[in-house]
Length: 353
Image 1 (tube, rainbow, N blue to C red):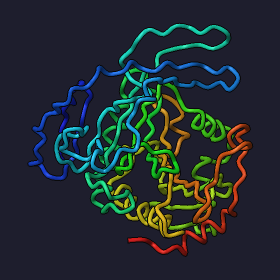
Image 2 (cartoon, rainbow, N blue to C red):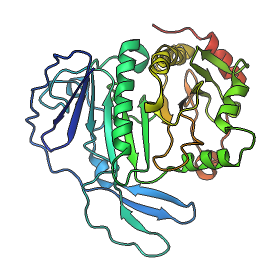
Image 3 (spheres, rainbow, N blue to C red):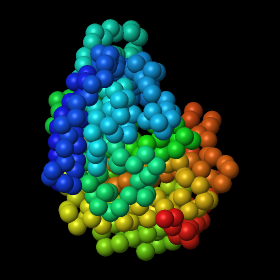
């Protein structure tokens, strides 16, 4: 693998990951770009004990451009990526967190305000605008994993970063703003609420590692969708979404860089088969969120267990699961599909090509 670092017209970092050592990335970004926005402000919610980022500049981000104007297609006058690529990673032009600090005034009351220090990156999985992650070859998925590994390690070392989150949003129903196959990486200046909650549950669990015990209970059971020597994909017993699959390595590791080469190689065919099963359920491109749960940078690494959460809000060919009153206001999920039935449907689904 060849790794090449360059910069865009406004100074943002762009990193190419290529299979070929002779890949040429001498092309220069010649756009006339505005100055980079200042970092968001973080506001503390004392009732929820959570931080909320306020990033006003994100209101102006690019929204669903035509394929002819896609900024993630390479070597176009408007492109974020000036040369052809296998996989490319660059700093988000409209970041939720960054190191370009401004002045931050306190708002009074019981809240606090601090800079939204961190970094947000875009990961382009392929230069093919019409592809999807599920259509990628095993080699291409492996290259994406190399990028995730590289970025997780590097972002974890940045000052002020407490957690690194790799994820993909797919489909207009999910709220994507760019249809080109890509994901994102957030380097948070705090540990996210979901991670704190899971680690708290793991700390209270007795008799072994909570995540390992969940995996052990699921392996070979009725909710398994697919498995191989190193990974198991299963619908959790208390799935919140109509179609939700968790992918666990059979060995406890804290993050993607800790996976062995064998585990990384085994991930690709299993994961893409699950994605194609999702698309085969109703014969439509399923909207989904794919989220890597990694250990925080500085604590809980002995309790954490790397896993991927994949879920869709589509519950039928022409119906979506909206997070309405109970889910959005109270955090009380109501699922429309029995998890065992969802697992059976996914096992029986035609795997799209």
